[in-house]
Length: 153
Image 1 (cartoon, rainbow, N blue to C red):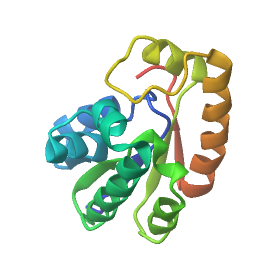
Image 2 (spheres, rainbow, N blue to C red; image 1 turned 120 degrees about the vertical axis):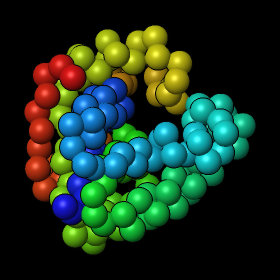
Image 3 (tube, helix red, strand yellow; image 1 turned 180 degrees about the vertical axis):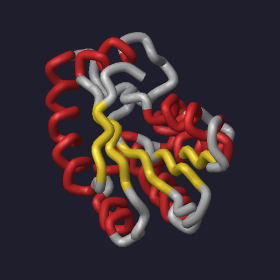
């Protein structure tokens, strides 16, 4: 089976959905956030704070390139901010792998992120989060092949 890619905003349910699918299929999970934390022995917020977000994005890009070599039997989950690094968007569009956008309401995402310390803080302001969500959503829609509208995962 050809590998597939999940994209979407942080807290959309990409990893949760992927874990459920992997349990019931022969697909193997490659989650770039989890792989990053394993490789660098650090959670992403700590790494970003110590080394800078630009360094994180460069290393994340390398992991994304590595993930795209897994062209069969993998469910590849990308972190929500990958779209802010233009080189990622180009290699994804050239990957020939099906890309699924996990589309979740921003209000659900806000509730999930409110007290989550395992992610890079974006903002405490709900309006700023919604603005970033809408900016990234446009990018996800231009990259994806399919949209999975999931009200609560």
